Image (cartoon, rainbow, N blue to C red; front, side, top):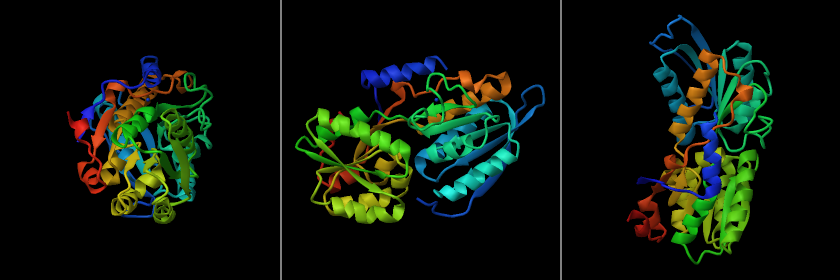
Length: 334
């Protein structure tokens, strides 16, 4: 169930205003995948652009970001050939694909998720790189400054309204005192979100305790270790946890443990509720930036990192999971 979020905290709104200035293992295969397509509409001058896409892993949020990007290219009416690659949540594969895309001489590379963005950005200073599904590009070393990238990398952030998500948790579980923050220690953006989560919890008189994994194989053991020690679980927009949300949800439901997450797809896979960004819209914004670079020659160095406007945030509720763990979400449905 989804409803538009009409307002978020002032800090998120302030960040969103920058847009006015401009952004597990795959279930079917563990090998890199390739897809080549060409749009059917013409730019007018007959130019066909070569675009490489590196998606770090396969899950709902990143898939939507990819879809939105392609839709923006198609709506712009440009000719393009696209090389779609998926690293299947493997760092080594991600690096290999990044090298391929750079060596193939693409006109632009679209990198989805922080590991993919870091792999590509570390290999080229010449090819324009548009990124998406990265919480803080500057903190992750991808740009000099989010308002003035200063290099060949720009794109959109998927910074989520963490304060509002924790407020939502407290609203639904008013007696909660200890929150387990579940994320992958290898994902730098997750560590950033974990710190923001600690601050949000402390502001409400709760304690946030980190529970980290290094890969999806550790999720079951770590979540089981949280039972009886925390009142609820919060998982930020973390690729590894997103791939294992079915496992998180299974253990949580068996033990009456509420789970909140940073992304709507994660909630649908095993959480209760969240306020989250629309990843399709993020991808569409990234696609518009790519067109601006390719067609108009706009310099990525001068294109601020984009953020989703506040009216695009959504409330997602998983009523079935809420019922299983005994959380009343009826107040959110009014």
